[in-house]
Length: 121
Image (spheres, rainbow, N blue to C red):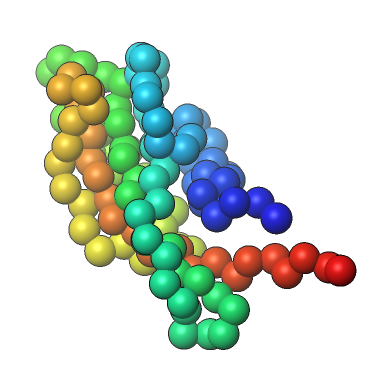
């Protein structure tokens, strides 16, 4: 079974082919648009066997300077479009942020319902 975070990375990568999507962790340099995926909590879903994962998508623009705000806002809209068109996946807030005090970003709180694969005996 793939880890839930990996499933979310795969889902976002498919919807955002021109954006680097990866699990959250240290970032040495931002070259182009980047989405970092972090999971913060999991609760039982409404449907038995389903789990609802809540986490954050840190949407980071690789642009600095005058155009950086416009570019990170455009990336946010692209990410929200992928989330909005995915059944069951929701977002609740998006707040301005920065990565390493230099890269403009938006942090989006999302909820992903995932049905884990059941291992066969």
